[in-house]
Image 1 (cartoon, rainbow, N blue to C red):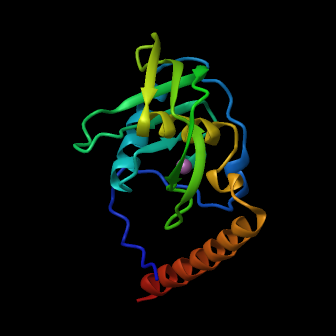
Image 2: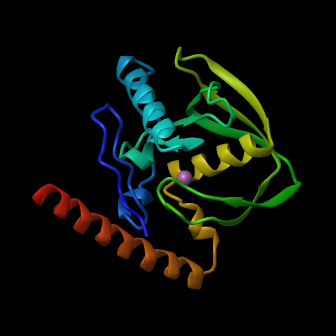
Image 3: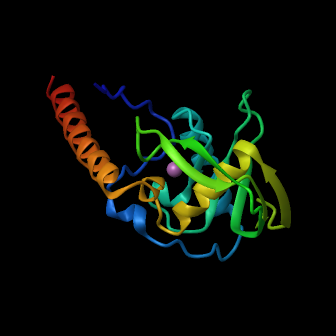
Length: 186
Ligand code: NI
């Protein structure tokens, strides 16, 4: 059972939940790394940290531009922003690992990903940088970049599993809304 906590008054953004069709929007490149983009990145970090996530794509907060925030560190002190990211190299070696997603709450399942990748992206100063990533970071980058293409990790699972997840989340969302309505009515 899932009980939503009252939403604190902060600038955190609402996260779209699967199977919301907006999650399948293909993001457009960021045209300019300006104050608007820096503000969006700051709000996305706040949203991600609050939700205890390790990565968040702009798609998930209903902004369809190629921007990702990530922090896979234990201490939550290594924020990373990828703007207009492109994978320039991926290892042939792949690994099946357990994944979850802030847009698919409570669901974890195995997805096969390259174990290491090289990604080129702009940072918040508009500088093009190359990152070599392995392990959890490599997985996270691939997962978040899928979001920018409108792809959610459950799409790697069998149709049977995916439908089961869809049904569960639709029901959960309905229960949450009913709970929220009751809380408001009180
Ligand atoms: Ni995700």
